[in-house]
Structures are given as C-alpha cells and as structure tokens.
Amino acid sequence: MIETRCLPADPSALAEGGAILRAGGLVAFPTETVYGLGADATSGEAVAKIYAAKERPQFNPLIAHCPDLASAELYGRFGDDARKLAEAFWPGPLTLVVPARQNCAVSDLARAGLNSIALRVPAHPVAQALLRAAGVPVAAPSANRSGRVSPTHAGHVMGDLEGRIDLVLDGGATDVGVESTIIACLDGKVSLLRPGGLARDEIERVIGRKLDARADETINAPGLLASHYAPKARLRLDAATIEKDDAILDFGGRFADVQQASFDLSPTGNLKEAAANLFAFLRALDATGADVIAVAPIPHEGLGEAIRDRLSRAAAPRD
Ligand code: TXA
Ligand code: MG
Image 1: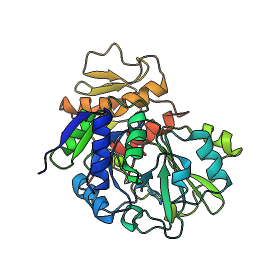
Image 2: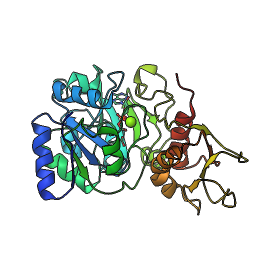
Image 3: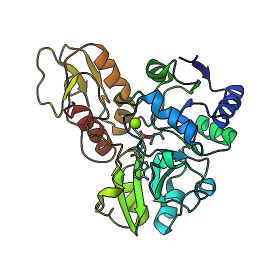
C-alpha cells in the first residue's frame, strides 16, 4: 500500500504531478473523455506499475499522450490521412494508431511490442498542463481497476485505485464521458478500432470518404475484451418493457413513469449528455445491488455508436 493523495488540480499539484511522472510514479488525471492513469511512457518500469495497479491480466498496448501534434510526431509517422485527422481533431477525443518511428522512445512494454503506436493529444486543460509539466509522453489507460467501468470523477478513481498510485489530480467530472475514438492509419487504410467520443461521420467528413473495413486482425485493439466494461449487475439491452426488480438505465424519458431505481442518461434524448452520464450512472445503478439493469434503446447514430458499444461490452457474458 502506498499513500494516495487526491488534490485539486492547481498549479502546485500539477507541478508535483509532473515531477512524480518523471520520477517513475503513477498519476491519475482527467482528460475530456475519462480519467487516465498516467506513467512515463518511455520507462518500461514505470509502465509496469500501471498493469500492477490496475491488475490488468495482459500487457495491452497503451495510448501515449502528448501535448501537441509536434511532440506526437517524435514517436509516430503521420501520413496524409493521419495528419488531416490530427489537425482537425487534436486536441480532442481522438486516438490515432500510426506506424512507430524507428528508435521510438516509447517503451516496448507500453506498445506491447507492436510496430505501431497509439497517440492522443487530449484537450482537457489539466491533462494539457500535466503533459507539459511532465515533459515526457505519458502512457495512460483509463484509471479504473481492470474489469470495472471507466472513471469520470476523481472519486471513482480513488474508489478503485486508492493505496496503489501516488496522486489523483481532481479536475471535476469529465465532459465527454466515453473513451476516445481509436482510428488506425496504417498501410494506406483508415479504420475504426474503437468507437468513442468522436463520431464516425465527423471522421469520414475530414478524410473525404468512408472508413475502410478492418481487414487485418493484427491491428485489432487487443484491449477490447468483450467484457471489459463490466458492472456486477447483468444488463438487458434495448429493453422494451421493465420487470419488477430491474434497475433502469433510461434514455429520453421512455420509462419515466415506472416507479423503480432509475437514471435517465438524457431525458431530452441528447446523445452527448448520455455519453457524459453513462459510466457514472452504471456505477450508481450497480451500487443499488440490483441483479439486472434494464437499458432503454439508444439510437445507433453519432455518439450512439460508442454508447451502444460500451453497453454491449458491459452486457457480454463473463467467465
Ligand atoms: O479516452 C481514452 O482513450 C482514455 C484516456 C485516458 O485517454 N484511454 C483509454 O485507454 O481508454 P485504454 O488503455 O483503456 O484503451 C486503449 C486502447 C486499448 O484497447 C488498446 O488495445 C488500444 O488502445 N491500442 C493501443 N495501442 C494500440 C496499437 N498500437 N494498435 C492497436 N490498438 C492499440
Ligand atoms: Mg479502459
């Protein structure tokens, strides 16, 4: 056990966070998507601590976070499409998988030995300030214990990781609420590895064509285990009706009249609001002890793709 401090992200806490990262420690910090658990990506030893703290079963490749495109280009090679996407959407909820540069300083452990690298420039001011204070690329998966839903508040991070990490920078609730969209730009193809906070049509608009089908399984995002986002309760998706003991994850007020534990992702049917509320509401419904969470139908379009993806992972059978 180590003592974990949780501090408001003021300038002195940010400076300290940077120093802890440079010294090989672990710092959790808000991005606009979810809270990340950061370590110096160039140090295999520091990155190993992430896996230990999260109890991640495998060495999945991690996203290296950088303060801007120029620093991301030190580690990855950006072709025309990757550059267009970076220029249009960075800083923001987009991760790009590109070929790693020869002599890439990001450790093999952070990249799980792959020839590619996942890079992200987050927009959250706390993430930006921390990355600049650290002066190194920061490997950061979501700051939850393996198998739990991703944290969107500093309190969620403390609940999962207190005693295992050095510092949590509290920057309040995150506003996108689901993880970044992961796009691979490899071998002339642009493909979606994980739907997330940036909708597919916005990406297609910038590259001027439809995304390529994901041909090659080796560029799969291996971290995407089917039951990765797992509350304890069982989820019933696209529920048309409610059973007596169900807890309810509603959308657009569909089950507003039902007298049961219920959280509405967005009473007005706004997908952006729904994404921001998703993980916190799943945690809250799970805490009621209900065996089943009935989930109202969520539309497929826009951010609905990422929300539905996370819900179907949470609903997947577990071993
Ligand atoms: O919003 C986010 O993306 C958050 C914040 C903290 O930035 N991070 C996050 O990281 O969700 P994580 O580790 O939970 O998910 C990263 C995903 C994993 O599924 C991993 O397999 C994939 O990125 N990935 C990383 N490097 C890759 C690579 N070279 N090729 C394919 N997939 C890769
Ligand atoms: Mg995660």
